[in-house]
Image (cartoon, rainbow, N blue to C red; front, side, top):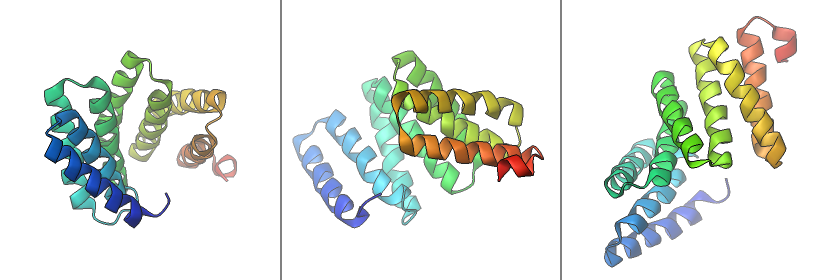
Amino acid sequence: LGEMTVAATFYEEALTIARERGDPAEVAQALFNLSFTYIMPRTEMLRGKDLVEESLATFQQLGDEAGIMRALWARGSLSVFQEAWPEAASDFRETLVRARKLRDAYWTSWSLHMLGASETQLGDLDAARPHLEEALHLLESSGEITGIVLALDDFAKLWAKSGDVPRGL
């Protein structure tokens, strides 16, 4: 994840500049970028939530489908870190619909991964399996090494939850 305090300083400045310029699209993107410096390292989750909610609302006002998709994914990630699985699954389902509509393979694969992981945590293994299979296929075909590793971990959790502990190990 790199040095988040350095990134936060950079993204805070970018947000200040975007607000001064008065461009709502730049503000929404800057809010999204800054939110990750709080959400991903799990430091100031409430600050991250406020940022991502403002970003989402701004993208919605602009009708920016790609921005809405990304902000929903960030909000879903926040829910994962808070172990709010129903909320996470809901956001990732919506993210997946939007990613497919936009024909965005990157966000489709990551949405499938996060949706399948959330469904596994909810115990909905029949729904999780095809999402994880498709995620792994897309991640493999794009050479997304980090995603492949995470998808394999998703499968280990799915197998363990389904009672196939040896396979999960």
